[in-house]
Length: 421
RNA sequence: GGAGAUGUGGCAGAGUGGUUGAAUGCACCGGUUUCGAAAACCGGCAUACCGAAAGGUAUCGGAGGUUCGAAUCCUCCCAUCUCCGCCA
Image 1 (spheres, rainbow, N blue to C red):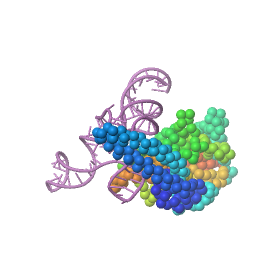
Image 2: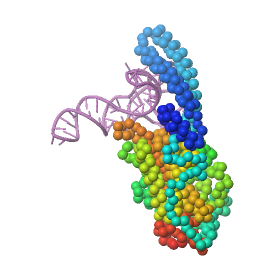
Image 3: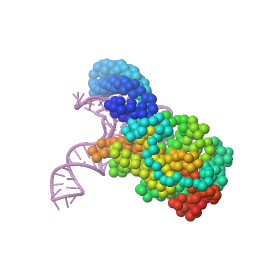
């Protein structure tokens, strides 16, 4: 959510921003509606003021005839108020609807473009592995080594279902622990957060109303979140935080659920695109300063790059183009791991910042030095998405004999073993 | 799932139809005092929106309703607590 005042004063910037994100929203209509809103609000408030004033007079008035007359008059005014309130209610409904569609403004450094194909490579790291054999894709690897059971996964869970098994299961645990150790050591607060969440949390983080189709919903009206960001961000909703407690840095773990509506043909095999996976997510709240947001954005991206380097997975960082940004995002980097079997990079991490877009919707504030309350800024980045990261590891570390070498840094988390065989 | 109780400002806690946006205490901020501090005393201290300002409007868990007037009465919802049931 943007501030309506900001929209009014910067409508050209807002329009340009929406255009860059390829989002249709009628700013002129919104402003016209806001004019109506202000006018109607003033009328209603003036009338209410009159009623309040006369009501006071009534209570003090001793002359009962005069009293009756005033009461009669106020009855009439009340009818008038009712009518105007109804009008205001209708305006507000429409106003709210458009306000929820207004996207945050992308940063000047965000490249132009419509889809992920136009994302811009910022930097790449690592030597792509050279194989003296034809590298298998991760699906073949996990099937050979019995690390994942897809058949029974489908039998039990349905389309895209899977069981992690044997060293496959252990690899997940090892990654979680390795990443967790790193972030806790950096001062992050570890959290296990709910996946089953109320609608407000998804509105607040910007996944609703637009993303309804990609979310699972219960018969009681709750939703299953697609990322730990949702619950972690909502943790402080409606609260005012002490200034010196910022920045807040969470490393949040949760199962993640995605319907993957509209991507039925994509990645149908394997564990790259699944309905249910697990994620460690970095979620940050900081003071309302663009510099601070931008600085922390680089920082949370660097954390992941460092870990990818430790794991020795070749990767690149892309700056996502306007059309590939979410509604609330100001800027986003994707970190993409090299997938030898596909001979290309695949997204494993997504790092973005929002300014106060989410905080406005979630109503998370802090008091600044002058005691004025301000909305916090928010950021998040994947730390470790199991299953995508394991898929990249398996492909990059595969051996000619079909086994998989365990990355040096993970060995101690997998019982000191050298290979998955 | 059943029964009961409760929901007021940062916290505690008054307030059951009329100058109550809300007593009081604590916390917090400023001042007096002090070499400095504590104590004491004085003053300030919710949020949002409209307005250049004066000022106005709204908010006492949420949404409706009754009334000239609602924190206070009515209806529904939500949350919390206690007991019972069920489950782990």
